[in-house]
Length: 151
Image 1 (cartoon, rainbow, N blue to C red):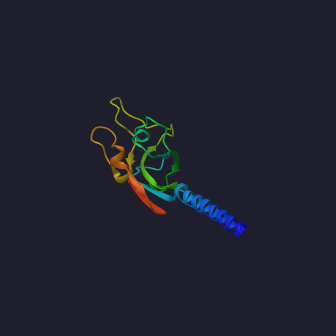
Image 2: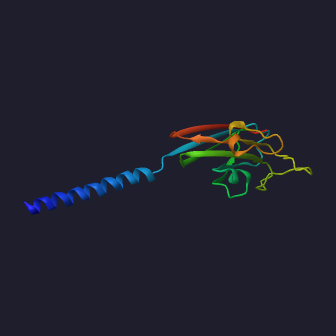
């Protein structure tokens, strides 16, 4: 009888530990989705479009390295990029048409962009780029499509 009680006690402890591990795994397993970005507003098909996917205001403002940077080809004055396997959360996207493929946003003497650009939510700033909050969206589904018109 004593052995049976010990065996049941040990089994209960093991079951409790495994259940706890499974619950912890559920907490750490991050849900992921796909963000498809559709870009329009190009005046020509020269060069590429540069996209940055940001997760914070610091990334969005360029104070911290962006979460993900990519280049996409322009076809028929449109472009598309798919960010796969992205953890659920808040993001912003900034994009610009790099016509001369120098990998930077070209500006005039006053600092105004001379290449077309855009942000998620088609957000626009009054005197400079929009804030992260203005451009932010929440990925909380397996698939999401974001349309950006460059101006």
